Figure (cartoon, rainbow, N blue to C red):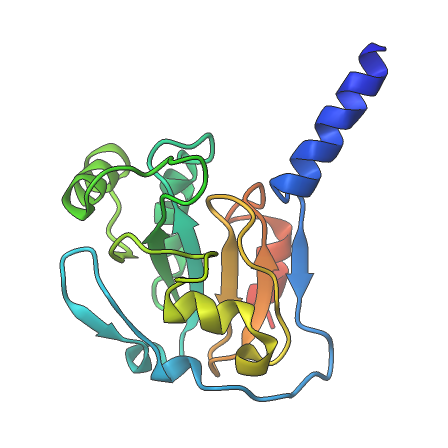
Length: 190
């Protein structure tokens, strides 16, 4: 009986939370959608950020939460940013859509990230990442007609998307895939 419960629990976690889920752009897929560089978003401090400024750099986009089991990834995301900041940008998008794990205001979220994890990479205002009201950045990330291939929306907090230096989406990584994982490292080398 215990083995059945353990198996069902594992299936639930892997299926619903997307543990171990990695999706990469198919080799040779060159379909073009709208440009990543046409996007913009409001920073957590209220500044409009135009994604054109990221041209020529790789970008790791992460939907974040302050009260999640994956919240300690902020520390690794900050180290990742410091390690690669000359060639890779990290962008954090707080969302309260997964079990209400980021209920605070933008000011509270910013303070939490800076105080507890020393976050200096760009954080954006709290946003929707999977609903019918999802932010245009997440519309682009999850619509194959726009990004060329991917339809995978975040299944939980700390889902990650990697954009190459040409503005093409090249990978999606579920919550359990950490920033310094071999999957992300492999795609960074492309």
